[in-house]
Amino acid sequence: MDLRAALEAKITVKEDTALHVAVGTGKANHIVKYLLTKMSQHQLTLKNKDGNTLRPDLNRVENNCGFIPLIEAV
Image (spheres, rainbow, N blue to C red):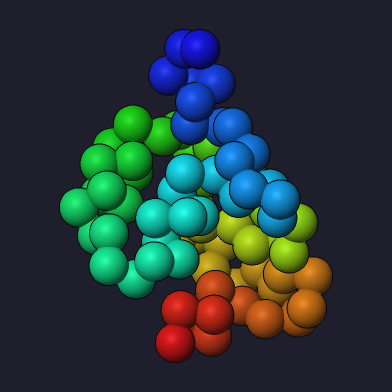
């Protein structure tokens, strides 16, 4: 598997990417920073089944439940 495919792979039943999982732990900031240096803007727009995306300029985009990323992060 090449790096691009690995960064885009849906690795949980909720279709999370590695970045979704790393962010979700709340403790893996070093991994989040690393992944952000490797991912394209397109890859940051990938959504999981809940509709969550991790692209910074999309921080006002609601997920499927109507929540925005800032609220989810809190």
